[in-house]
Amino acid sequence: DVKVTQSSRYLVKRTGEKVFLECVQDMDHENMFWYRQDPGLGLRLIYFSYDVKMKEKGDIPEGYSVSREKKERFSLILESASTNQTSMYLCASSLWAGTDNQPQHFGDGTRLSIL
Amino acid sequence: RKEVEQDPGPFNVPEGATVAFNCTYSNSASQSFFWYRQDCRKEPKLLMSVYSSGNEDGRFTAQLNRASQYISLLIRDSKLSDSATYLCVVDWTVWSGSARQLTFGSGTQLTVLP
Image (tube, rainbow over all chains, first blue to last red; front, side, top):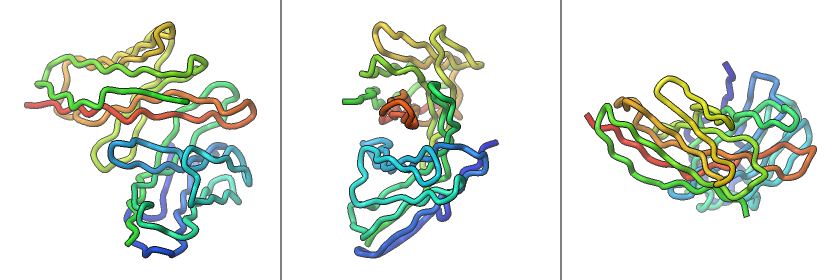
């Protein structure tokens, strides 16, 4: 079974702090993704990566950055946390299969509150 | 603009009922389709892929209609444990050579009542 592990289930930070969310997958997947999920808005893609040191912006990258130094680890960084970044953050990974898309496997999620 | 549209529900059905969800998508070039299930305060989990010829997994049947650009999920003999939010998921290619993204619908909430 694919295992995607997010470092924290619940996190509380203050406005202006730099926040790191870590995600590790154990299935040697090429692709990794960061989403946030808010009521009524569904899942929105923040950033994704298809290889080590490669990253691509998703739909809502503003206020975020990412790092992929190793294949198994994909970090999401909130440069200066703001209250509108309070949300559920979900990491996912998938296998690269050329032109076929593969399903994504999700971590448990991190509920982040910015005070 | 990429879009995946679902009826948000909620669908409240009695145990044993048959229930169907539809989902429409706007990108005619989409090639991969999935249904995910998400329980309250949990992560989404893959329920089933959707194939062109339609496919079945136990009580669940998924269908794809490319001409009309919709996919459907049918649940027969619904159980209390089927209560969840069902997410329609469609792939969205940014450009060749890059990872193909998935676009998630906002979900349809199902409650199966005893």
